[in-house]
Image 1 (tube, rainbow, N blue to C red):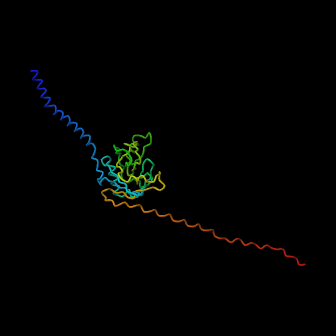
Image 2: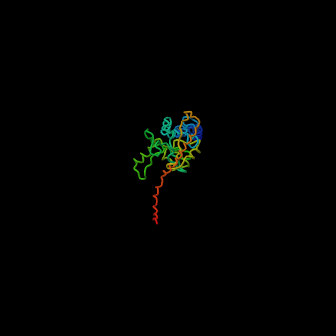
Image 3: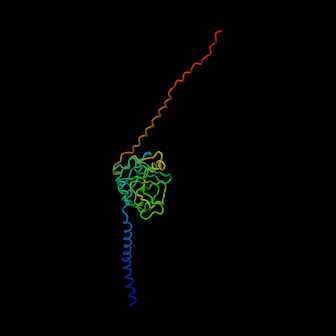
Length: 252
């Protein structure tokens, strides 16, 4: 009897073992699906709907791959503003060597934005590597209240910056919403300064779905008018000298 019981147990193990293993594997696959489906699908790098073209005064076109999977609200904002030609002609008002180039302010001094409401923070997993495009926002002073920090974090609007060198200290503190995939050399050529003395600018901004025309260079800046010659002082006649009276000789 003991042999029969052992044999039956062995047969049951052979039959049920693979089934149990398959069941366990299925749970693992299900768990993996939960993890992978927690994020929207990454858009294709060739999808025109998520390609942003910036024609710069530095000599060429910058192509940015937008990431609505990571920052849908900010991507929606730049698409809307681009369709309104908001970015055309705006200056790079703050450009720091080795750090980043910032633009998107109609005032040109870093204090402005669009008339639309601010965009809430969408801090995500995308890093601030070279070519990352991130939303600019207000900063909160050290020791600021929780309310002031939250206000600053949710103050993105129209301004953005393009990173020159990796700056990971900004990760999960600013919203990365795109990445330069072509034309980074034209970003590198942007004039430096806070503000620059002769700022570079965005000539035109397009979406891939706009079927943008070929890049057209900026017209040359008009030459400064030649300085008019300084008028010579009016010539004045010297006062006429009074005749000197000579003593007359007395007649002898």
